[in-house]
Image (cartoon, rainbow, N blue to C red; front, top):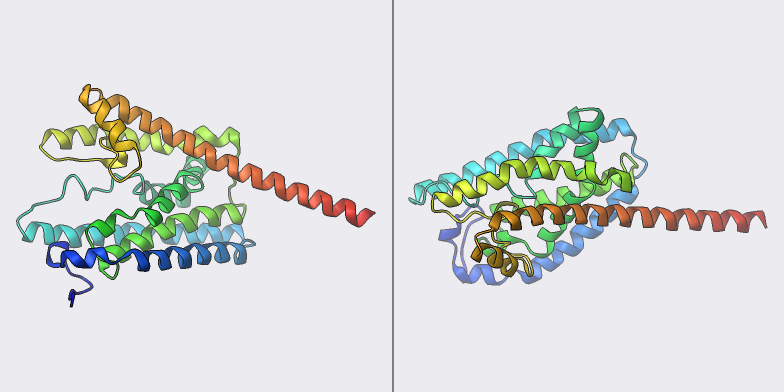
Length: 275
């Protein structure tokens, strides 16, 4: 019988416990996606002032929970003699941008807010969804643990927040907004790319924003290895940064296609009523 506690550290959990998560993950994904869709439909007429309030609330709650998670795992790491997990625990992942974009979306105005909200409605959703289907946390912790709970809550909130902003028409990005939606990635990359190289120079193996090795993603590890073998990892990092721009425009294209379909349906109904 596999025995472990909710707050147990990864090294104290039997290896077999990490091999029985597929069913629970599948159930979670179905429930989470259905719940997000239903909530967005139900809350689509939420007033802008209420959306502002929502952003302000989670802009405070999300960083607090992230700090708790980092302190909790770091306490275990340090107590077991491993030291701080420099190449895995810093909030420098693509998903971590959610933490930093929220205050700008909630408390700023003008161009700065537009860029932050633009990120939340595009790449933020993509990053959250990828962790539904390929959750790295399950490589270290079973489904029913604190670390997994925090990770799944975090990424579910990422997806919901982005779709909530779109469904309430708080912000629906257009093609002309693509660069603005992507600028937070550029700003964050200015920090992450040097951090990756500095941490690697200290003997660690960082892969923040998938900029070094592309771990856990299809095809990326082989591409990263090619660039690394030619000592041009920086080029790979920059290409990855550009790939985020393509994903941003992909989401904008999806939104605009849906809008065209809705408008076409309304126009058809309008003509039918006239006739």
